Length: 365
Length: 267
Image 1: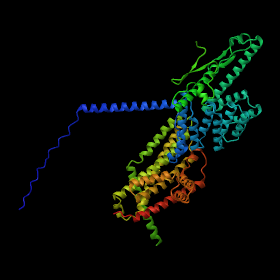
Image 2: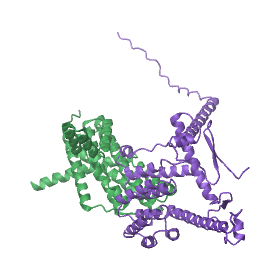
Image 3: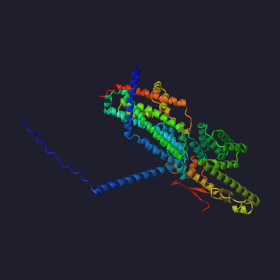
Image 4: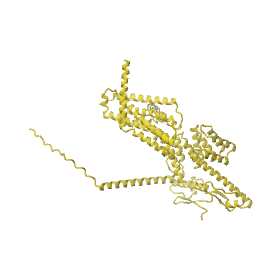
């Protein structure tokens, strides 16, 4: 006899709903989330700040090599070149705003053109900045020459090189050759031929450079080149004004046997028609004890560059030696800078404990 | 006899077409095409944002990003689609009901492959439209070179897709994606591999470098993006050679895949 096992009666009751979390649990979760977000932002902010400090102190910004980028880029070299170009521009802008040295700019531009040799912009921009801002004419000319070799059909690069050779490096013979080369290429504006003729005929000179800059300022579409032309015009004007003032001082000295006490005396005595407005909005300053005359904006630019160069050298000394140099002269002895001289009576002061350098203003008592 | 052969041929093409349509619709249902649409919108963002960042060279950057996006997303898309559509079905056995019908295994492979390539074609056209719009927005020029570069990207995808199909047949979905991705990566470095063999100096390394160079697909052949962006002419002889190379490579790999698939035990 088999007995049917009684199965338990089915429970048709609806299962009770899971207990709803208490309201305070939601508040706790929101608080935890808010704290986590705040911590995240603080950590990110600190990391970025620390990174900037390191970069500013050491000038250290890693630029990947073209080979690395080629491997990482899955064959998308052009995109990698664009990234290097944009990063290079950001680096330039950031360092310029901070008035910090930019030792890696050339590397950014070199990497961009190694990945995309047909990309004309890094050659042109890099050449201009290396020659004009960073005072590295050989590197700038080399970059432009590489660009010309890789892009023999593009007029922009020989034109740019001619322009820089004429205006910055005062080498009209070579400038004429590059203007002529540019003028023979498709799309080159007519002015290249004119610039070549001027360079050949006049053999350089300030007047010719002024004409070139004025025409470029009027006709060029390129913003960087136009800005450079405007700056070059200002520099040419300052040079002319300073020569005029120096000649007047010399005339006054020959006539009276002593230097004038102020520039106004030169105008009053008829040695100088006027001092003229300084094109950058500064003023012409004069030291009667030495006879030096200079533009305040040029002094500012020179002091700034010298100061950044010295700060960079101190940071490099500290990075290697672990301590700050005992004096600024130690930087010269180590070959990190050529000299520590200042201009127009200004002087550099230095604190060996903190590594801080500052400029002593001789006019302030 | 001849009429019978033609009829069989026609029926075979029809079966491939039906499978291709199914594979295409499956990929569309999986929302794979959202990727190119998002990238097309991103391109317009790049067009607007790089204008100030790039010192007036935003058009070149936009063209570079657009063409690289076409190539990269198409390669990724084809790998994903092959892994999800073909390899997964093979692994799960859900392909068996299809094979129970009068469909040859080679036809099934070819149908899936063609359907996936259609998806990629839609992807490329979508990004091209996005690129065109973005270029119009910033006043950038449009050239035939861009179209040729996109067309060669399609051929590259056909090659990568064929390689992925082969690995789908002989391995698992995950491995198919990994090996397909490796082929895509190494395909841009075959010349480096050959040079590496020469640099090592040994006869065997030299031979191995040569074997790899000729066996692996040379995807650099399909990269004319530089010429397209910088406005240099792309010779018709070069284009013809690249198309023929891509078509033959894909055909050989698909033939090998079909051969391996015939011998695979699906039970």
